[in-house]
Length: 94
Image 1 (cartoon, one colour):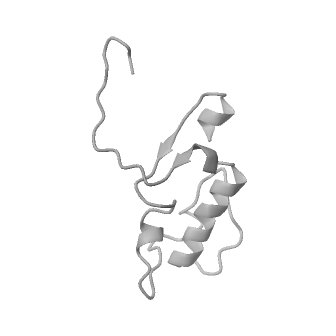
Image 2 (cartoon, helix red, strand yellow):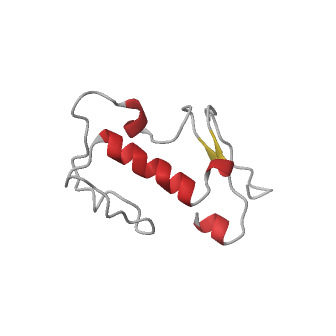
């Protein structure tokens, strides 16, 4: 988000078919965060919509998807892209 605000191009590579990390993949009954929701959110995207102190998997995933929508991140996220290696080119500084 800060890169976009600065006018710098960026891409986010996501191995899964959507955003959410552990909150997308772990859907067992009772899945929830062990950190209070007001601490487990981005400082630039605070939410007053938490229904419990310790948000459920469903709420956390919905929050992350709202952030993607609100900050128009879908265009820079490439899902189903697994990074298997990365190499620094000293001469090109990239």
